[in-house]
Length: 136
Image (cartoon, rainbow, N blue to C red; front, side, top):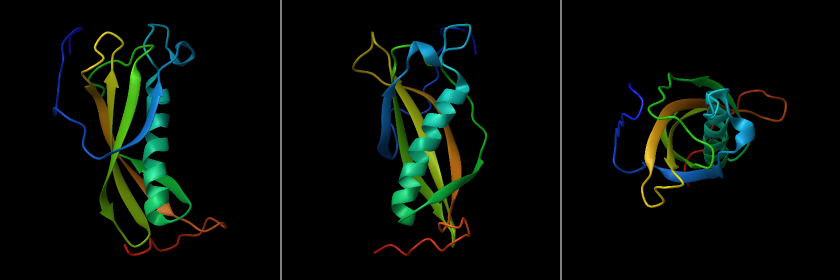
């Protein structure tokens, strides 16, 4: 993708808002954009929070599918992670995480910057697998 080119894969976030933060200067790479690892950590926090609530307890991250960055995240961007459960197994959950940003100068519009599916396994305090409870 060339600089300035915009890809909008969807027009609105899917799922529930699970985390919102502001990208800060300490999270940048030498080019002045936010590190992809920082963004991935935010996504894991968002997905893990959703998985924890659905699993009614402790979960651990076991996998992340491929991520493609469509837009850079810039200092001052409001970063929002939306989550949606895509699969529930006996002991695991797959959570789709979409990241949208609101640029400082584009306060009313959000841009999708990336998405990925995170897989979590429900565990006991001793880290052994446990069943994900049935929905009530």
